[in-house]
Amino acid sequence: MKKFDHTSFYEEIARNKRKSYLLVSFFFVILFILVFALAVIFTPFYAIFVLPIATLLIILHIYRAYNYGDASILKAVNAQPADPVKHRYLIDTAEGLAIAAGIPAPKVYVMESEEINAFATGKDPEHASITFTTGALKNLKRDEIEGVMGHEISHIANYDVKYATLVVALVGIIAIISYIFLRSLRHGSFGGGGGKKGGAIILVIIIAGVILAVLAPIATRIVQASISRKRELLADATGAKITRYPDGLANALEKILKKNQGKMDVSEGMSHLFISDPTHSALDKVFATHPPLEERIKILRSM
Image (cartoon, rainbow, N blue to C red):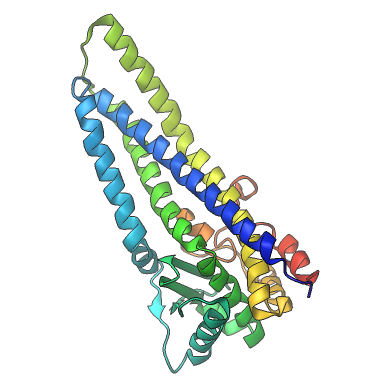
């Protein structure tokens, strides 16, 4: 295995954190514009007063998602705590690799699915968990489970889970507000008044809102995917460093490539959490949250 460059490793983490802050800022701006457009449409005379209240509600929603989003994610996929007897090896592996990475041992969960997959979630290394599918436990050998676990431990150690959990909440709320906005235009009787000039301003805001409401969900998925893909490569490299056996993860990814059909019953908004894209669609090339498995395997084999 090639010597690991600690300097470039920490620089990459810093770059990814900066990009994540930009991503969150991007989401915030979209949310504010959509909310303002809605306020202007329904309460044009009171929009300036509605906006601060709406903004506060959005902030509270994101705060709640940041602190409790992991519980919602685990509930959404019906993940259950790993059995201390039946899943002893899985729990021990998580604890051992967490020690190697210098972080607290995460909680370990198992979810029902024939697909080979896993994901990490949480707001920081002190409040994190890792979930494996039953398909992964059934099809992967011990060294392959270690490889996957090392990858997920890396996401926790790199603080990827912090931003990934936020993204789930932000993508979701943008989709909801965009839907409300477009639906309101179909049925809406909007507040009016303000003379010709005021009416022209409202019209401009409505047009801008429509454009944003249509494009926002697409734009957020593209930005989400671009950052997520880079993080997967970093987690592969860090996981190989922790386990000191890159072939374990490479072998696991090869099995995923051969066996998985991309038919997991999970929301697209959570797809970036998993080690491999849990769902397949015709738009994967544009919105893919992961690099091609072939590329990841090739990089791991070269280590």
